[in-house]
Length: 197
Image (cartoon, rainbow, N blue to C red; front, side, top):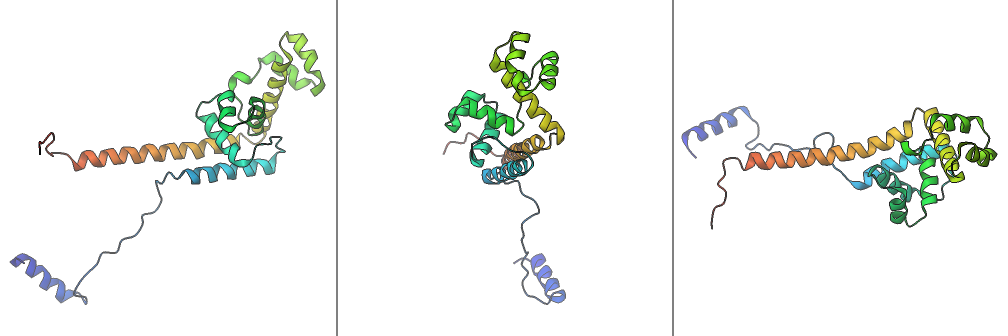
């Protein structure tokens, strides 16, 4: 122990009741944890609230619906999602409409959309003939228009909450990765590299 250290120790002993001091450590507030389970918990919560507000027609369970949401926002099409969930494309489409996950390409043009809004459910064949499109196209367009209408009635809150849950997770992963890389760069700054041992 050198003179300066001894002086500091003596000063500490004079002013403190303790002979040693230990810095307490505690967890900081918040977390950048990217626990996949916590994201799924958020997605499940949104789905359950949506189920409480609307009558869902899908037969897929909540775990598969969570996976569907992830795959949809990951850019997968219905065929890919169906393969992932081991179900049919029709089941995926029906579930997506229940969850308000409508793709822009599924919405009809203004004229057909207006006709769908004004028509009843039994008018599918008539509209298909009138607009010279396949019946299935009218059925899917009608489902998309109805899903969009339900979504707009609640200010698209459920779709927004799906996006927030997934975006927060993506941001946390990106932020953690960036912080890790920055920390490594700072820790290795000025260090010798390519040293042969």
